[in-house]
Image 1: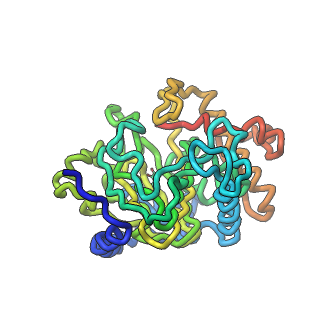
Image 2: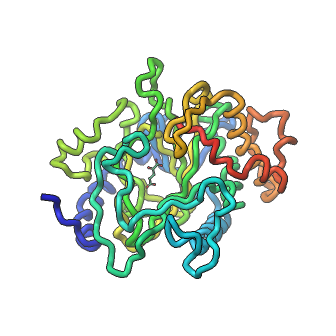
Image 3: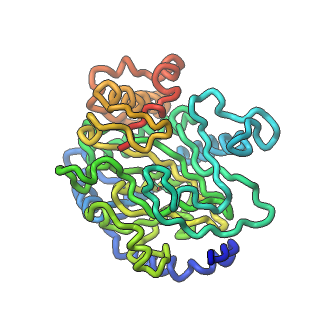
Length: 386
Ligand SMILES: O=C(O)CCC(=O)C(=O)O
């Protein structure tokens, strides 16, 4: 017999011991948390790189300035205020035409409050085999709630500028090499009492059976946090799992008496302006947000060039069979160069990041209205997903 869904309050209460032990376990990873630092050569500090390679994550504290976080919050609020009321609606909550009709792919995806839309389904290559507990939302909850906002470089000027952040891009170059290339981006929105789960999964699809497989082959994701995060709404990871190959998630859950509260996991709690990096092969999840706290995570990933070149697109919403050739990679990577220029025009005193693949071609990717139409609009149709 199917078990009854807990109420939001029952769910929150049932998680508290797990949260407490996860927080305590997380404290033993103190080397994987701290400010962004450069080594003597100006690149990502080797101690940070070593800590990331060992455990598959790092929390960069305070890497994005308060004023920038405030702008990001404001622009996200605009997107939320002008969101359609659900996936089949084209008006917002005030009855106005909703934002986003100009893009080939809607910036919004919705779920039922507190649900797990991917767990136990074949969606996204069936990589979320277990469906998480789906608590019952309060009676006055809306039918649908925003889950992910996509295309931050075209919907938010501050999102484009964040994409060109010199410290973040120095981290990407330190991990994936100077010719690093983009993956995709997604803003995870976890509203209090409404935000859904992301079931346990590893992100990579393409290279699990590659004879040259290694722990870094599927790249990594940033999450820049706009609000303080807590064990109840943040991302959870099992450190070190990026080195173990494809995880048998069903077996792990079974051996844990069917419970999704997997052993060995830690919560990546953050302050606003902190940025986490997580290896995409690390086992990770987040739980239904039955807390009172909002989480908004600007999530965007990067790959090694050679992991992507010649590969067939995976995780695509359009079931495309595109092969990522040099031109396709260059087109998507040019968003980084435009982002660097948009940022340089806005933060005139900041030293811009030097993106090696576009050295000598910067003038072709200056930020202006024409470049928005040519490079930025609908750039996310060209995401490089492996
Ligand atoms: O932030 C979350 O809740 C989930 C993020 C995630 O699964 C991912 O970035 O792959």
